[in-house]
Length: 300
Image (cartoon, rainbow, N blue to C red; front, side):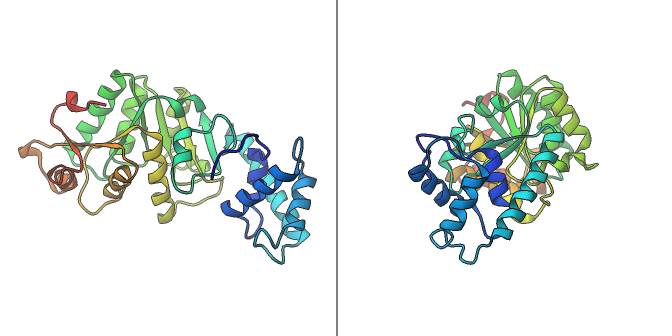
């Protein structure tokens, strides 16, 4: 999908369109092309409504009804109102502030839901990733690595679920660093007991929490794999703190290779090797990741 010369679909439009049955990314992209060719000036709901009804067959949504569109628009309005109450900013793929790095990946999100400073999405950054159940040594290293990277004026990209991610996120915020926390759920998840404390700290310290999913979206396994591509795309390089061989972290490391990101893996000392670090050793032994024995080995 190429960025058009002019913007016609706002984030609000896209949110409403996505609530219509059978309307997804590809259909919205086709609709956008049709509107570019036929519409001058701003887009209204009436224009969207007519464009959908007049081009239902072309858009591959035969049988689309007025009720379907109205229902989707109403759901969209409710989601937008709920998002506004939570101070969530919704960024469209067609907005100038949309991160250019995300435009380069396969199936980029049409919208990003964000709490905090959107300017963080364009700063030099490194993704810090690792197991949800790190060893005691892994916990120590996660915090130290985060503090070291912040000291080098890098922002961190990570999740806030338990383990290496949350430890790194907490250390980053405590050090006064810049953090982009990417969630595999709707941003209402920050009110859950597992996320609430760290999320509040992130917001209070002018950092950023982002998701491609609207409020009410649940934490599903497929969302985790989608989240990987955002974490990797938003960062200039990726650092594996500690991971076993069969893990989501290893999959994210593979995604980093696909995106041609520089991949680092902390190289545990021999007396600290454990089941949780086998993935690190595999990545290093295969030459997939650059060995990090000392923090200064992280050369970007």
